Amino acid sequence: MKTIKISLYLLLALTIAVALFAYKGELPTDAIDAKYSSPSSQFLVMDNGARVHFRDEGIGGGNTVVLVHGSNASLHTWEPWVAILGQSYRVITLDLPAHGLTGAVPGKDYSPQGQLKTVEALVRYLALERFTLGGNSMGGGVTWRYSLEHPQQVEAMILIDASGLPQFRRSNAQERNSSVEKKEPPLFFTLMSKAWFRTLAKYVDPYWMAKQGVESAYNDSPVVNKQLIDRYYELALREGSREATLARFGSPRLVVDDVDTSRFTMPSLIMWGRDDSVISVNTAHQFSEVLGRSELIIYDNVGHIPMEEIPRQSANDVLGFLAKVYAKR
Image 1 (cartoon, rainbow, N blue to C red):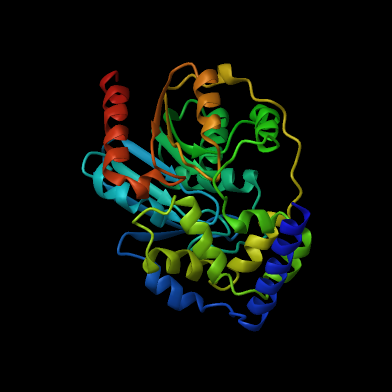
Image 2 (image 1 turned 60 degrees about the vertical axis):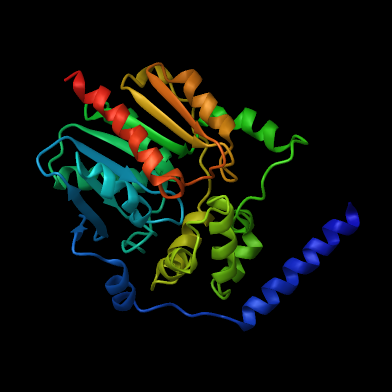
């Protein structure tokens, strides 16, 4: 076992050495924005000067669904759902600070509270009164935090392979320390948790980390192709975004009190890939146990990104859930 660990560290050192020689500088904002914007792209300038990229699509004037992406992703992850849900609903997506075409923001607030303020600003700007809020991974954390802060606005929650509640961490830590064999997680998240790596990361070409991370998160799905990998890679290298990402991962983790789950009074849909290598499917069951008005769907042979891995099936499940939510109005 010791020999294996030494070999892995040597391989990692060699990889970093090679990456240093293969340094990739930042990509021009104008070029990246032109490539990854669409006719639906809009930009909101917040009071703090942050320029937030968002899209307002689907059926105008109808019931509204707001979707929040996960860590190192962007609003592009929702495009398959927008094409399907948008036939029946107004669908709003956005890039959080340090992500997508929002990128670096003045004040460098990339904390969960900063993410929450960004969603709040967009909701105010669009004058949304009631809506369904959904999120994947880190965006799922934004979703349940927003729902706690603004229960009067959130008609329903959709949690897709979402970051867990604070009280889940103890049992999840025990699971991580167990001998149960699990899928290899994205190397990026492991390395970015190390201070020594973050000091080097601004000089490392992130292509191979992006590739391994996408393949792992998407459970080696057939949807993983060069275009998808390039999207993660190029948005990560947009001017200012690499530094913003380093700042986000370098921020100290605050101790957060357990959440009173009785405050979640809205109906919730919990969706999870059984083969998620980022957030264990155990978290899905934990959400199901504490959310009183919830439905749980677990997808076999699916990873961390169901909305892209199985877009039609997952979107149809959302449509079925929303039909029940809005039938009661």
